[in-house]
Length: 138
Image 1 (cartoon, rainbow, N blue to C red):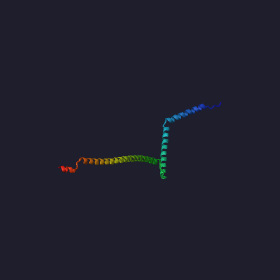
Image 2: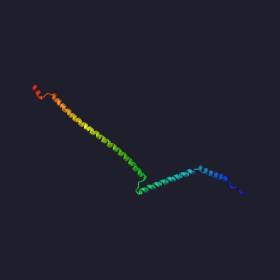
Image 3: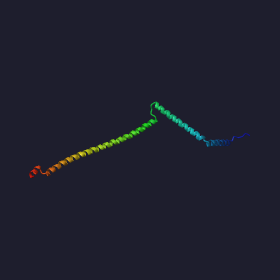
Image 4: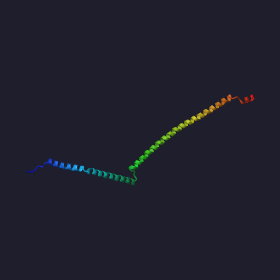
């Protein structure tokens, strides 16, 4: 009699051997070590690509990502300075308006003081007897 191929037994044997091999490999540092090496290679490749790209941009006189970031920072700083200058100019304009108002108030006060001084001089002249009368009585 010929022996019949037993698929179940073959599968069971294969599964048992494969799981034992997998468990053995997983218990060692093999996967984590391999993944670590792969990550290290990827990082080195990325660094090399970045450096090459930057050198290429520099040789063809194009800005790199770093250059654009630096320019962006300078634009933000410049914008802040312009805002500060706008505030300063606006305050100066407001203060000049106040100065004009104060100057007008001072000029009006001077006119009022002159007018008051003239009126006081008139009152003093009216209250003082003429000097000719004083000389006659003496």
